[in-house]
Length: 605
Image 1 (cartoon, rainbow, N blue to C red):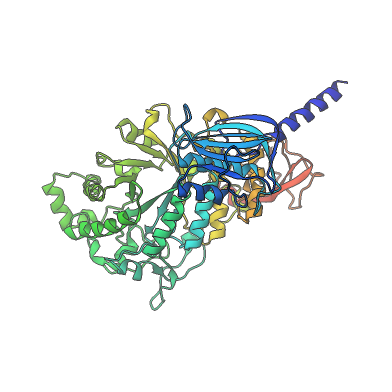
Image 2: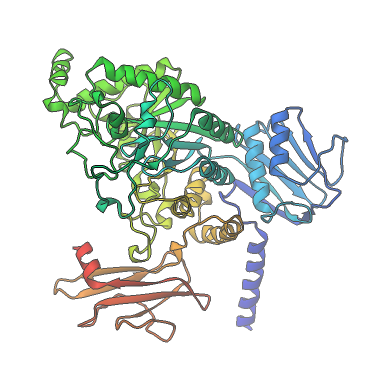
């Protein structure tokens, strides 16, 4: 009898859960209703605003549903701009009943996000006719105003079509900032009409394939044929494309370091004025000068020319100037730098970098923009009005906020999308680790600072080890699902088991859209540690609940007839590897993970 009641309870619970739609990010409030709204051939869109851009936005997001200006339509989808008490400019109210849908928002951005929610309530289809949506009431708005993703297009160039596709994917999940890392040592990707050599020389390097750390340097006689750049018309087109999706583009021109591609075009920008090639890797760091000379008029004239054109192309309020990983060793032997430090009473090269950043900030402000830099701009004294993007953990962001500066949190251990997602032996080669569950656990607001100074956060896709667009998608998703939810949803709404179920529903959506997401979360986690006697202990785990792990230590392929993992165990004498397979709901999931003892033991030590 008790067993029957328990089974009945589980069935009722599963039915109730299945009636709640799988939305990412989770909305602020969601009240399930009764019944469904069916979209038929008679369904009409009633768009209660004369603004052409908004009307176009609505029809673009609800294709195949005709509009009508007939007043008081029945069984219609009504979209309107109107104030909502307690709801900000990016918020919306969505009411769905069997007799109609009403989407209300105070501003166009809120309407756009409400439309994305409606799209997630429907199957992926070319037309919504014949579909139905569950009845519900959602009132929603974001936790943070800065919800970003960064794409590095310098280490590998991604064409205009892919950048648009990436922006489309961002828009579905309510991201509103696209941080575009346009320049770095390995390529200059933005056309500057007053400095055409930047793209003529700086946008191209010799072709290479292989692991980033072992790629060969350019050899004499090789033709720099790999790369590309965006023309200014390309930039304008992409900026407009993003604006139509309520995404602001923040361009990054990284300086004073990470400048080798510019130096290849204009060697006079450095202290040594040495002619260099655009590098294929990062092995030159500290050996070749990739840092601007901060002590000459020519450097600031160059920066002014670049930022003048950048500011004209990007209407958003910010320009990101990098400021990270600037090697200052060449400054210490530069006579011009020594003189500048003496005249300005600068005691360290860190103070010299601060001197540089302060001068650059004045240039940025002269273009009507605000400066953002990585947390290294704190070293030597931060500029008065700068915004800090904290990547080396939360420490830099906390320090900046305590000094009263706005902060965007993007600590690498949570937000770097170029890191391993799962067991490295089952992943494409990269470095370090940021699992999906780790990204989901991220909270941008430390206890010790004013919450209003934390603008939000973002995920960063550096592309040293991301050579093509399919792998860019693989590294971004599903961790960007987690970051989207962290930045939009109330902290109280976050639930890892619930998120997993919604994520899997969105995997099906991505299958239909042909997006190459990672399935690393399905793979087992293997940790090998040597104990005090030198014997290797094996610890197995999994990110997903309700999984069972079966393993072998004799080089055979495990299944459910092999030992079930219940606790850490010692590797048998003579064993060289562990193979692990995960099962869920009676079926294998993910890849079988095989970890060889010498590799892991060396990494652990």
